[in-house]
Length: 248
Image 1: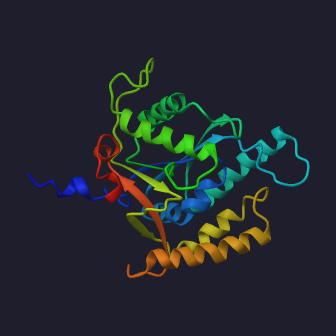
Image 2: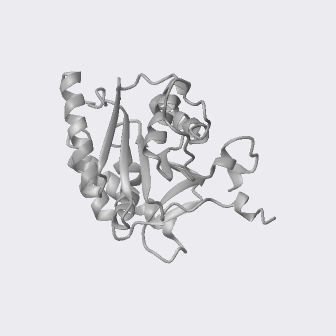
Image 3: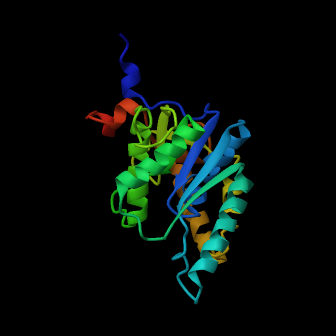
């Protein structure tokens, strides 16, 4: 038996349907916007799941939480559609409130079993120094849903049929094992980010452009292309009792 596949990340770019899970309304654009556009260009059906309503996401100036949440929902769809996403799902949890990993995992799993995507994307909850609990909880819940959605009785009390995605890809990761060529979609990523008017002013967009240009060039080094986005990609066997997962 050839066990080499056990020690390699599964492919993600040939997926026909993916689910991009974000804690807040702008995380997908910032963390993987170039990849969303690259997948869309390949004919992939792209679904967004936004877990919180983003009603804390204004650092200066007064804003009614309900109005801010409504604005951010509109920005989510506008930015996602600019990259090629076609379907949007919202859990509307209060921003900054996430703490129950098992409960959130069950909700994500039910959506996974309904949509039947081949790949899940989400932030890396094991990234060093990640201080935002919404990111940690969302990433860990997505990982649990990834390995549990194939179980016949999970989540309890649902009539959905089991489904096992082939891969989970963590963005905002310090340990990428897959780099996607975003040379042709880098500008599209920033155009989509700019649609998050409540979050990103011109100064912040300028800082992000410098930072992500440097990061993307570093990730693409020796890859044969100019700009890349990095992911830690794992398969179902890697996500439970697999001690070599950090090395894949």
